[in-house]
Length: 256
Image (cartoon, rainbow, N blue to C red; front, side, top):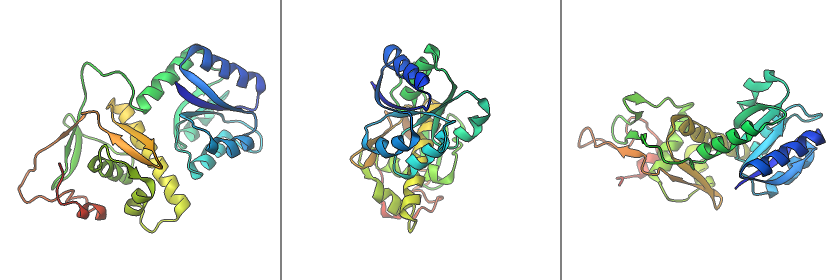
């Protein structure tokens, strides 16, 4: 059951979307707000899996609301709803899981469920299982088949390596920030962390790799679900992540 918050300034549309989600999908509506300002105050106190935000709202748009929530530590995916397609490019810059035209339909409810399953790594096992081939030593690399994975940003790749080396172990967010965003301003570093986690989840959703990054106890745990193949060292003296030069990696002497 996905816990969802809806923010929509048109009451009939708000009621319709809440009814559709709860009636025709595995959704529990844990909050409905007509005012983005009320939503901004209350959402941090709620247990939420996804946000459904209207883009065109007076005084604060859905895009501005999403940006403010990320800066306040909310790291859940956002589904933007609007009557106008021109906002699509802007929407996908702010942790957008999907962008749909309103009013919502039954097909959109089903699609949202499917995208959340993929995003959180809960989709059914595929008959043709896909795997990542990871070289951790020397010239470090991550491939799917024969192709190198194309990372959205360098920090996205670095955080993946970091979580992989801590697989199935809780990584507290402040420790991650200390290691990867050293000397960064606190609020900006938190926003960077949440956006980077989101980008990793989006990437593996697109690649159909069942890797799960779970929020727990003010931190994250990554479970690769046996979708990672660690390649043998190419030379005996190769060092961990040697080609990457990550400062935190020097603390590791060996892996596995």
